[in-house]
Length: 256
Image (tube, rainbow, N blue to C red):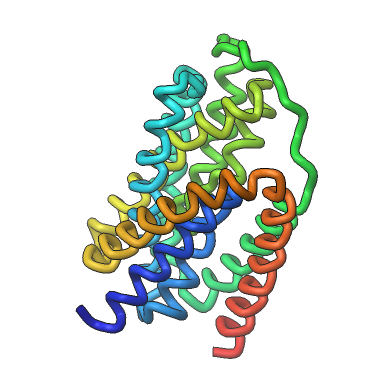
């Protein structure tokens, strides 16, 4: 096993640990870690590889929520169905954008995520909501837009999917978080498939990154329960970290 392999496992572990401790948003670190720590030379390969890892982790986390009955399947399916189309369009566009353009844009997106994480949580919403004909166009429209961004940048997009689902349907936060995992997995899989067709997924690195993410999640689970009362503070600290990483990515991409 090479040093790059160990770094891939370690970076996956960091993302898995962060996701266990603070929830959504942690996967935004995957692409910068793959480029600047693991040493993946092509930003496009890093995006494709990141999308694969995000998809696997999302579907793995979806299982527990599905068993608990937290997923609003009709809403999740409508959002994901439209979002997959958006993700494929976004991935096709992203592959044609030069790395000198896509990385600064990615840095700006990271900064937007960090600012969003610093905002107070939204209202709880309605836990009994169900899909209606009037609601469907709103959910599909939101899914298409979020899917495009997910495909373009190779991110899970949970930080956008959760408020998008809540705004379009009025569902409760817990249901939105659970339902978003289906879309995160679907968007990631669609994006990864698009990049894989053009040879832009490093399968070995993806497997090692996913393995590290599983280990990080297992280590983070007991810590998460212990630090539950401090999750708000942890989330704010992570948001500040993301801002610093965004500044670094922007500087490196502009300075060359």
